Structures are given as structure tokens and as C-alpha cells.
Length: 426
Image 1 (tube, rainbow, N blue to C red):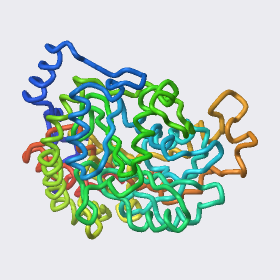
Image 2: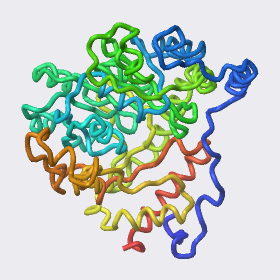
Image 3: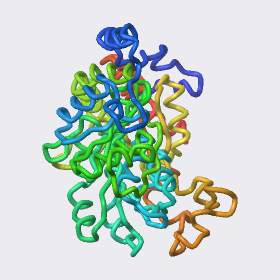
């Protein structure tokens, strides 16, 4: 191995085949969807106050199954987790100009859902170990306009829910959790994403379980639950008939998930523990094989937490290896390692925030009377997230492929081969 020539420079590839794609859909889902199609009832939602306001039998069955699995009082299905975030933020009663603290290290919808209600995203930095919101940075970013914290359980590791709830309680803030990537992980014995005022999960096709597109919102708050259902399904046309007096943010949408998707979701939910367990097993094998490579940090899992490994996160100490991340990724890809990503996200640096242009061309909502202060999105406000993205983060996408033990063994061999030839890369 030590003298093996890197494939990048003409040597033989470590992995000379394509991995199998990850496909969690089985015969059970096919049969469930077939029954719905044969029934002719693909949806039963009506956007008015009558029994079908809540959707058809599979929608309601899936929601009850989610309540049971996640151990919450209420679950609401939606057509995407982006829709779920929009509904969740509207349901807590946010006002135009209010601020919500959010991570820069996430998918952009976590922040744009805030803008949707003409509220202002404020970015706090992340922990280097877990990549989740740093409670210390959150506290530093609280202002008189702050009304909520939106925490992301990124990559499958739970955020520090106790610390964030303590901050929220102290400052009379709502806590929202985005657990899109972490279903099936646990924080202090309870499922991740169930500790907040409102949170939820993604059912997008590249998640642990999926319905193609979709999302699940969870809450134990009765008022938030009612408002989620209303925002999901044409609230403005329903509130009068339902007798709802507080019509704040009762601008409704068609965020409804269909009967076919929910029939698939019912079957997928039965398998989530198995799917998560397999990724945890793969991660253990990877960590055991890679932990002694100089300058490479394998994932950290904090006490009282489990990790569901949507992404297997690594940190590269470029000072120790004296090779850029880009060169190492190129060498690993040449060896046949698929699914690698360098960097992840610094969404505060997207054009929408750098130029502060969202609605119209005049900088609304920032350049308006509803925005009470100047909020900075300058590079440098989140130094840990920025350095990770620019230099040191190396991720492996765990829900792209159905990895066998042979695949994992060869991935480890490829890493070791590259590390044994760092001098050549330099």
C-alpha cells in the first residue's frame, strides 16, 4: 500500500466500480401506493371548514403514526420540509421585523423561511465539534427584536437542546428545530427534534426515509398545532367557519401532502430504525479505519447523544497534512470514492443576504421601517463556519449509496493510500 501509485497520477484505482444507489423503497411501499391508486382517492383535502379540511384517511393515519413514533401530541404532514419551516415560523406568531437567530451551516430554506414572513434572519456561529448552533454565539446575537431561535440538528447530530431551551426561556423566545437530517437520532433518551416548541423532519428523496418529497411538523402546543393546520390549507378561507379569532399570519397555502405519499410514509416509518442503525454501523467502521490518519478528525458524538449520519463529517487539519483539501478530494475521487463534499454551507454569504434584496428591488425588508437595526451579513461574523466551509470540512454523503461492508473496506483503503502518498500530493 505504501508504495502504491495514486490513481490521480496514473496508478490503479482502489475502487473500480460504482456503488449501489440508496433506495429505501421496497415492495411494502409499492403495494401501499398501489392500493391508494386503485381506490381512486389520491387526495381528500378541501380548503374550507368541513371534515375533509384535515385530508384523507392515509394523511390522517400517517400523522397519527408519526405522533406515536416521535412521542409528541401532534404531527402535521406537509408537501416539503421547506413548507414545514414556513408554516412553523408563521404558527409561532412572528411579526414583520422580528428577528430569528439561525445557523449559517444549513440548507438555505432554514433562513429564507424566516424572510417569508418579513422577519429578519440573524446568523450565529456553530460549534466545531457538532456543526450545530453554538449557544454562546446565540446569546451574543440576541437583540430586543429577537423572537425565536431556529436550531438545526445538522448531519444527524442533535443540537444542544438543553442550553438552547434555557436561553429561549430566559429571553422569552420560541425554539424551532429543523431536524431534516436527523430523524431517528436521540438526545438524552428522547428522539431528536421533539424538545422545541415546534420542529420537524424532511421526507425528501435523499433522506433516511422518504416519500419523494414531503415533511412532518411536530409540536406539543395546541395553539401552534391548530395554526399549522390552517397555514397548510388555505387558512384565510377557513378561519371564519372554524371560529378562529386570532388571524395573525393566517395567510394559507396549499402545503398538503397526498394520499400516495402518506401511504408510502406509513411503511417508511416502520423501517427508520433499521435504516439509521445501518448508517451508524457504517460510520463506526469508517471511524475505526480512519481514526489514526494524521491530521484527520473523525466525527465527535457528544455524551447523551446518538448520531444518525445523514453525512459522515470529517475535519482536515491542513497544517498537519500540508496538502489542501481540494487536492485530497481529487485524489480520493480518482481512487473511486464517491459521495465526497468539500465544505458545506455559509448561507449568510449568499447574494440574497449580501445584497439584502428579497422582495422587490429596493431591499425589503431590510431597507424599510420594519427593520429596527442594521444586521450584518459580512464575512467574518461566523468564523468557525466560514473556516470549515473554506478550508477544513470534508463530508461523506451517507444517504447517496447503499454501502456494503466491501465498499466501506475499500473506502478506508483509499483514504489510507492517499495518506501514504501525501508527499506525492505536496
